[in-house]
Image (tube, rainbow, N blue to C red; front, side, top):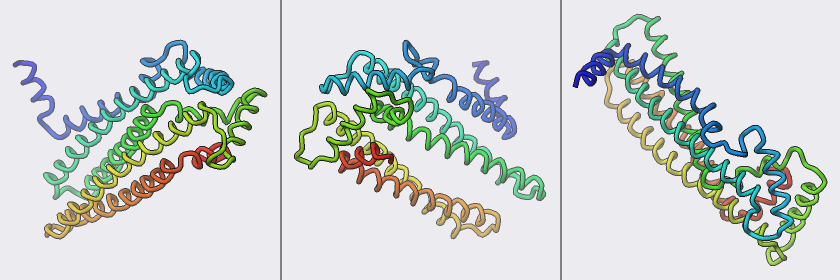
Length: 277
């Protein structure tokens, strides 16, 4: 009970709340860059994941089967854990940024009569928190995608450090993908195409959810804009409405593009090995 009272006193004022949330934001950012590798690492870590994946991929392609050889399985498992931890930290960072935004918004309403310098500092703080929140949202989406399809998310590592065997494997993959849809494809390539479809489908679904949420936020902001008589509140609502609408449009484009890639993942994979992503 005493502990709860102490916490209540600590967070009683907006300034203390902002200070606590700023500290939490900093801690989450540090954890985002350091914790995933430390918690997920084993024989594979971010220091050697590229080399391990390229070696495992060469053995995988040579086997021709759908099942991963031991080294590739270990690498993919590490990449799954890495993205899972990063997604968790990103979600926490997003929650802290949202709480921070609420505190700043309430503080600005309570201090509406403050001078120009105070309003400018509040605007800058809001912009900084918004940037952190956007970073956390993008990171959450990307890491959920990576955790859902860790093998596909490792494929960009094939573009560096190629040796003779890996170059030959990539050439064979391009040849099989360039064949007609009825052409002969190895079980390994079929598995790659399927995983590539999952990779894009997950991002398409996440982007669609985000687009819907941002569109709703934009509608609410415009309603507040119409209902408010205060000039400052109207400006804030208009800015929020425009920003939400723009971000919703970007998310919708991402959703459509990834839906198309998931629907024709063989063509998307062919484009990747031709130099695209």
